[in-house]
Length: 273
Image (cartoon, rainbow, N blue to C red; front, side, top):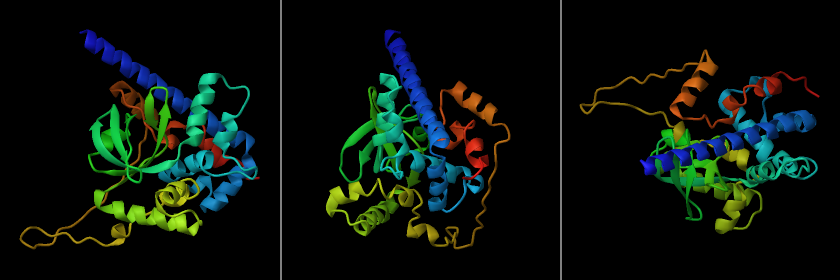
């Protein structure tokens, strides 16, 4: 019984930390929208689509890139500028700084505890980390390759922002793309150059589609008879009900677009400068 109480206390502390990290991420985006409107306009142009026309998945990629990767005219990202604010308390400054320094990386999944944590191995460096994750851990399986951000913090590590999933067989295509982007930006060769490419090439990497996905698949039974493939899509009519259900189950959505429901409409509907 003591062990169970200890585990519950740990899970509660992890959840509270995750909620605080999400809240800091929300405040970074709010500050960016309110204080850096011209930069948001320019970022939309670079992205190639106004926020009002972005899908939910595109919005996730856009706002994370905007806040954490894209350098402004003054030479810093919005998250770096936010973390340097003098009016932040020590805890918020620490979390904002961790978000500001978090970069995309290729991570290979080694173990998963659904709804709790995910054990990852950096594909380029070989280092391992166990990161807290409520949502990504529910979708990941061993040997998946993730393009994601691992954020070290006072409780170990967590994931922040959207994560893209790739099959194990797509790993060579991903490594080749990272190497290509490093060369295109004149970065040093080898692991260091590839690692350095994740910052300036974050948007391109999050949009990367392996060549194998563009091949039209053909499906047959074991006897050689053709099969039909169908696709379906749906939308959520009551987002609040979904959030309440996930909260009841102990999960928290990690995609930044759906978490920031109070800010995304402001970003999509704001007048352009």
